[in-house]
Image (cartoon, rainbow, N blue to C red; front, side, top):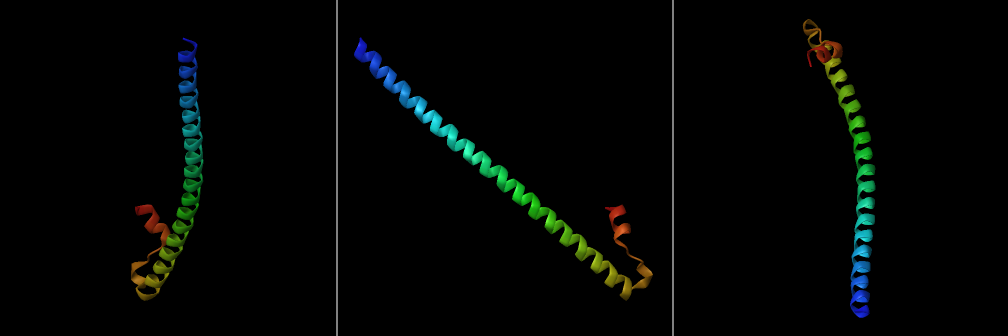
Length: 80
């Protein structure tokens, strides 16, 4: 009976080790995902600012070429 108990304890130890390893890997993956999300959010904000600047430049050029349109970024933002 003691041999059976030792075998069961060994199996339990293997399961606990596997679960610990899996949990650790999951934790690392979650941390990596959070870091990646933060980087993507930062990149998204930079791109948003570039698009906003480009839109302002386009509106200025359109205003110069077609003054009767009277386009401004404020007008565009109010309608968006």
